Image (cartoon, rainbow, N blue to C red; front, side, top):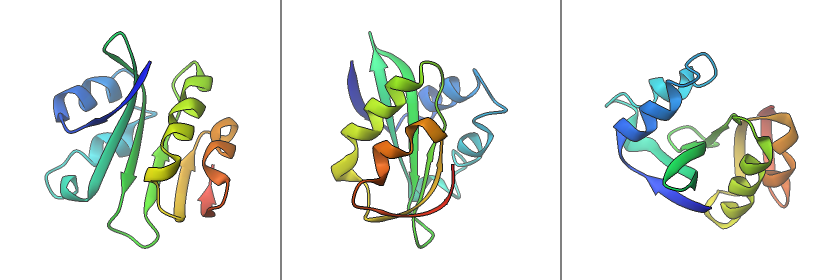
Length: 112
């Protein structure tokens, strides 16, 4: 498995549309207005997106959206791999069982 940074809206949208009710905010952030303020990372297996994390850097603090698809363990792995790429302070929307993967030294604001 590998972590990749995605910039292909079609790949991101295809993943999000598998569970549109869960990933509605992420789908909205694909809009051209929001797109320049987003970074997207995926946990992939055999070239297929298994998990997706979005960092929206426009607000202060930045917002991390990381709502896990089953299996949740792979989202924890993705977030652990992103440790060095994420800012010190975050507003989080993260699956509760995955929150510890980003907490570490960070100041977290928000809810799981």
